Image (cartoon, rainbow over all chains, first blue to last red; front, side, top):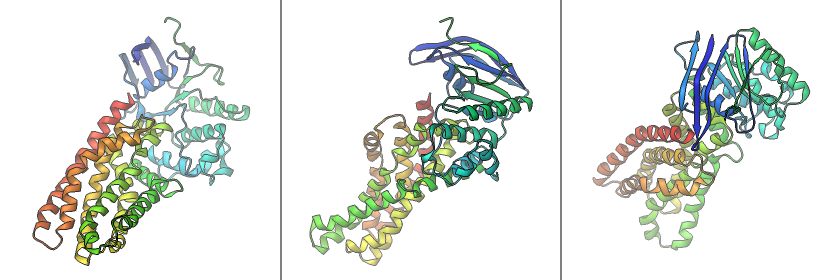
Length: 201
Length: 220
């Protein structure tokens, strides 16, 4: 499976965020996107999953399921955690698992993987920022999808959780997945390609 | 299908929890109808004549109450991004959210209406007609409201705009709903009631499509 972007451009709010972005990520590979604030890292990820329409250029997925769009084969971990405070930790994860097509799932395992097993019955409103992020990561573990789009995945995570995340990313890559991550610092992927946005602008 | 079922269950759960919209809507309905006799005075004939109109107005306002956060809360916490990514067609997603909203705010109002009808001195045939018109008409209020909720999704204080956008569109529903409820037992009931049914059916189709189009536009 290969995700190919050619001459991708994004235009938002009357200004060009980025233009002429090219990359190819194949199964088992990771690409980290870096750049100053406002360089368009998040916009690039949102363009890939179709939440933003590219102003120019093309996105192609080779070797994926041709019946599905890129977004339907991808997980997106954005700045917002997409959690409902009035639902419990297990209910939040169970909903997303069901919504992404894995209804009869045991949420215990993914919660344990991110260290939230003991908090399954707690309303998500009581979680700290790092715990909310962990719960979002549990979603990626609960429902297998080949493409991971991670926007600053390590922000708010403590050292232990960053190691867990790095391990998960490595096993995802080893299993033939591909990762696109926007990050300012290292996120534990040594062999990742790097794409710098905003230098030309 | 599983996506939509999961969404329906989640929205109903959220509405039933503390701070959700379900109780607020029916409590508001109860409050408005209960204080009306105090304002109008103890004239039983007047209450009987105005009863259906008051209940309909209260039902309309109650259904608007929880509507402004319907998409905005999902937008604010990032859920809407993930929902848009999922494979489910946006029109169906919108319709399912509308269904959840009706089940948690419209249906309780319909159930509470007979009791409140007694407060307003309605006789049994009038009560039956009122409940029937509310049962058929409140889905129209919700599904027309979806359009406003979708347009106001990115606005911080969308509630007021929502009311301004949605209330004019609900005028036909209000007219024929109250007309049918008022003409209980007379031959006129059939005509008004049929038009009310038609308005509901039309809104069930137009609402989700218009709301989905508005959401797509807003999310760009």
